[in-house]
Image (cartoon, rainbow over all chains, first blue to last red):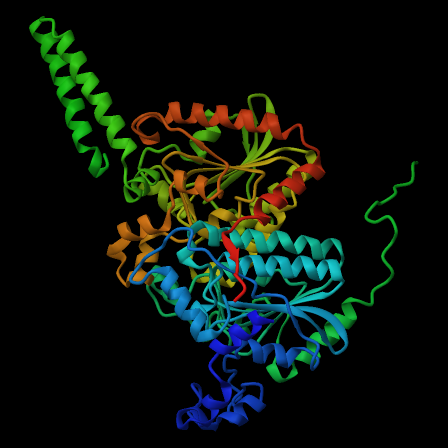
Length: 296
Length: 319
């Protein structure tokens, strides 16, 4: 519990933030309307004027999905090692230190067990405010162990992604987290437990190219950028303008890449409904998968 | 054709050639002089290649003349039968797949293919696959499981292609699926990074029981140029990025990302393709002999564990 307090102490206090003149009102990036911050928060961080989906802090995301008082945090007990001693314009260990102080958690991920509409789930929520939600060793380990724990405890896995991709400062170790998070999903498949993936703005690179797009059901939030290569990289490659809406949720729905684009205010209900349907199939046969062909 | 740091080696080689020609022309015996120069050349080569910077190794990994997937398929393997197409979208020339024999053992080979000249490079899209290429690879994984054929994947790509069609056809989705499908193989799988292991596009065929890498090959989460453009805001800082990324074979074995480094002949693979391919073949035969003794369950389990443990982190000390 001392650990819990230590993190809390470093977290910027929400109350202070809300009461400061700058925090009271904010401008919607999409429609430029002045919004009262409390209204935005009460509306699931969706602009009351234009329905633009603003980014959601990881804790608020958990609060939106978990039944009240049921969330039990699993993540937060491990931290990154700077195995490469990576230095660019700033040392990686310095970047980590600053991010930890700013965000108040050891890395870009929050996981835990909860009930969602009374159904047992494991929540994996990426935190974009921590180094762009990039996936390094800690994010990969937290996701893999939450996935395995979900399988062991009979929980549906729900991943809410927002990430710039693999974390460059951990080099090939970050790349390997794509394989690690993916192989861990095998545990859920074997236990025949659902995995619902929710892609939010932005989900790109190595996260999109691994566990994020392997959900049994994939929902995307409206207007989210979801891509393998970023728009700038593609523009540099093909040297022409990208079509409007390219790599956005609605475009991907059209291309058959996601199951649906879901308004955040309906997300919880939609997830609950799909889990309930997936988990109420015919009984699993004792001996599975063997097709008996009658001898002629 | 030679790499910038190879200039002194080339000069010395030219000098030896000249001296031999002169000796022949004048019918004089310069054997001991030539031998002395040859010794110097060997020392120079060894010294140069032992002390290559990471950025220089990136250049070796990409060097023209380095054996490509098709070179291995035609010269290291026997009875190569190419199988084309993903049965959905088309046939991606950036990935060559098919059946072959390796020292008598029938296998499935998946090879990322760069061009050996400009024309072929354009045809092969510089080894950068579209989703179709990964779908073709997954088709091969299905064949491998069905007919119990070990899988050998030769990795050599700057990365999966970042283009309009590739995104529309779900580049990220197929890479994720390929990673998953390969991890589920019930037959032995060996991946060899023979040149450039570029990010997710390489990993898509890199989820093997054993991951091998040639001495001067690289394997990285991002190219040094792109990394420099993002972190230093200047692609010209690629040399610094290459150092920081720890992307050489020696780095990767220390990080346990790869299992075995295959030495290249002195002077690098591009200076001795046949010698290089012989060493790769020998390594593959050894690895395959070992993996063939494992049951499907053991193969699945050991592959799962191999990737499950990767990464570096530590428990947070209680405050």
